[in-house]
Image (cartoon, rainbow, N blue to C red; front, side, top):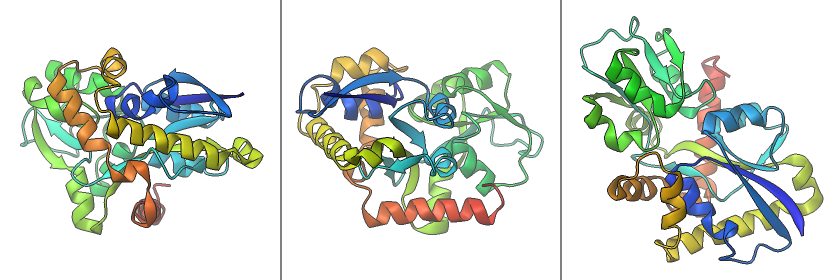
Length: 266
């Protein structure tokens, strides 16, 4: 067996799709996968050093490490109505003066905020699960939320300022590319890319066909333990694009990169 270090986030969409390939639910030969779970921005940063053979990345981070990592067709978080939200205690805030928390410099959420309003400068970087408590405590005036935060922000007395996914869809007519799975190019050069891609796709399909099989694994790592929030998270971020990016998904990712380059962000 060839040992593969597999890195992904503890969020429900990732644990849901990787469960089968880590728990002997499908045949993973000729590989044995070792899981490494980290916050997505940690994964983004570690990719600069090529720490893991296969890793989850924000699409924005992937743009920066394309020389060392190749995009997999399966496993992406991409779709409609699933973009990051800019939230605050009140909609009546000055965005140019507000302290706005984002879940990491290399996240797609940060990129979308910069594309939406280049005038925003007062950005504070923090882990995604610190943003809503930080707004509630007054540490931040607003924040860009991702993952489960999308479903629980009203409980922190926050309101939506803008849905950055809806803004993207209105601008481009395309699904929003949030996160992807990439394989290190030296691993791909050994001829492993297609097999890893196939196994990942089979793991996603198993998750679709056996929705409750991963329940214990998902809940063991979820920040929000409420069943409804977990189910909503999975339903929102895991879809047909997760099985295959397809032409539409790849074109959307290319559009995001083109916009970042044209605006001088990348």
